[in-house]
Amino acid sequence: MPLLRIRGHWYAALAWGTLLLFAAGAGAQTWTIETIDGRKFDVSRFEIDRNGQVVGAELSDPLHVSDLLHIDSVRSPTTAANGVEIVLTDGGRLRATTVQLEGEHLLLSESEFSGPLPVDRVSGLIWQPHDRVARALAQPLGDSDQVIVFAEESPVVVVGVVESLSPVGVAIRYQNRLVEFPLDQVMALIWAAISQQALPTDRATITTTHGNRLVGQLRGWRENAVAFELTGGLSLTLPESQVADVDFVTDRLAFVSDWTPVDVEQRSWFAPARPWRKDTSITGGPISFRDPATGQLTVYSRGLGVQSYTRLVYRNDSGYDRLLAIVGIDAAAEGRGDCDMAIVGDGVRLWQARVTGNDPPLSIDIDIRNVRQLELVVEPGHQFDLSDHANWANVRLLKSR
Image (tube, rainbow, N blue to C red; front, side):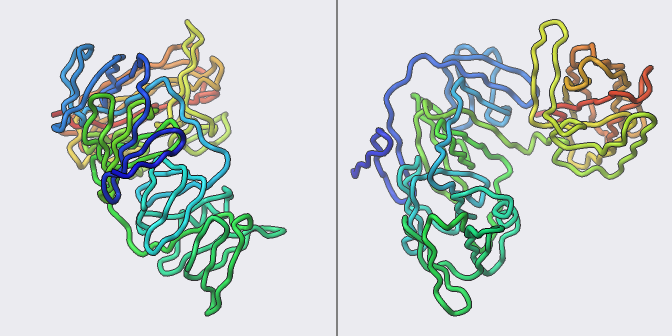
């Protein structure tokens, strides 16, 4: 069995596209397991078998991997400042010190995945982040590669077919001539979007302690090792000591911020008119609540930020039967704000509450069985619409088993 030594760890290459990562054993570790319906478990040990059953002596409820929303460790990912970021077609990201093109594969040095990595699994390579790079990555060309290089006033995009890539430079065929750029002049390389690979409905995203993001299927978690299959069939087995956190996507769960409302109604009286926002507060900051009793600030990455009056209407055509959220006035209002929040289903008020900036956030779990149309409504309270910066944090729909 061939061995590689990378970042002080021994790696055993088992087969093409398969990598086993060995690392020294870690000490006691606490994990927080969060389910899609909001339950949380703090455990020191757990395992996930091949059938997706989550087992552990400290788990009070039986769990399946389809019940999971997030697994978190106390470890924070760290990202190297230099090198190259490899953006994968499934949304995953890897870092390496250097990358080299060999035929239809990329060879990575000093990366958690040593490859060879098929080029058709890669959207782009980024050496220097920039708005122009982000735009090219979001809208790749269908039949041409793009090399983005430094220039005096703004980056220059060279369109053609990349013929070579080495640790020292990139060569691209541009208008029937070969143009070579030293790597220190290259900001990014964006591959042509020849084919788009559909993501599986149920998937997991692992963020490693080295800052890499792996997207695919969790195949098992036992004996301090995690078996993971990347989108496209490439397999990894990595020690749990290199896992920072895991996020899960399942067809049993839908975040409302991923949906487009079928109708929007907004009115402003005294407060400045602001459009509602996805995954940020109404003012563009993070969605957050402050507990008035403890002063603790809690930040959420998903949700809706609105102000009174706002009415957002959604269609529930997929049979979701529960709506869950954390609701209240955003922490940035600094104790101000007073409004009424309501959930309306098929014209009937299913839930409503008055919330103020001095109140702790409310957790809601609403039965929406057989409801086809949902409305999220925020109306002014006793202080008109001033500082009514309401959050529907982590607002999501569930399908019960």
